[in-house]
Image (cartoon, rainbow, N blue to C red; front, side, top):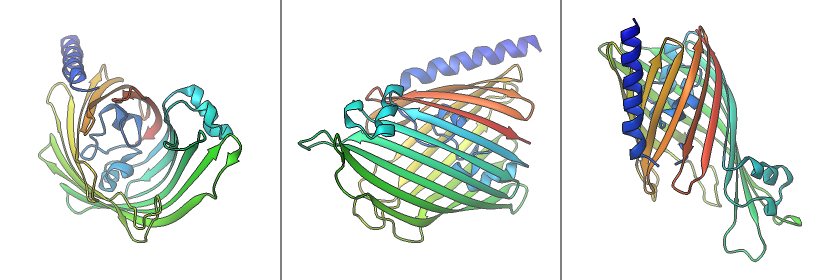
Length: 312
């Protein structure tokens, strides 16, 4: 047992060392575990946050409850959002939080995203704040022991405001809409899983930046393999936006359990700015798990995320 533990630890260190030089930026998405794996989670999706990544994944969870929170940028800049003060903002800042509940074939989740940035090309220092709120209901079903399908029905609200030192300079631009996520997950033997998700298929139009039907629809294909003996999980995702002007991104991640209670993670994703690095760790005590993750993007903007969850 001690030899196996040492081998697992050494393998985890090697994987972290190998992945780290490849990377160098903020991982999109939701949940510290997924973020620590570089967003390569479509074929994993087996916890309380599964529905966000692949609605079919909730069939792997008898009961799950997850609480999430994180920020991008500097903590000092949170004042910029709270007081709507552009002088307190010297770069981009994002805040994200939410909660998810999974009961085998059904799920309910809420995600809130707040993002602030300075507007370019304005005479006065102007701060733009984008707010997005999403409530999703999930239903999934195992068609066979090897194949599952899932569906998210999402109600999304978006609001954009612009502020100078003297206050709001224009009425808030807001809209709402309904969209679907369609997901599938299949097992290939005992060690391999593959997944596919068609995300954000708009049922109604959503205006973003004055453009109608602004849903960021994308096709995500993923695979994951579990290494025998060591318990290592290696996963990869390919994300293809279906709207014009968006780049395809490649995500890769690894997860290594240690001593039955600790987990190390590393990963990243490739986009037009280069390969971006993320890493994280977790503590599992029976059905309770705590995870943290961090990433650094090409502009040296840090993102930190934390998740607490209960899973049976």
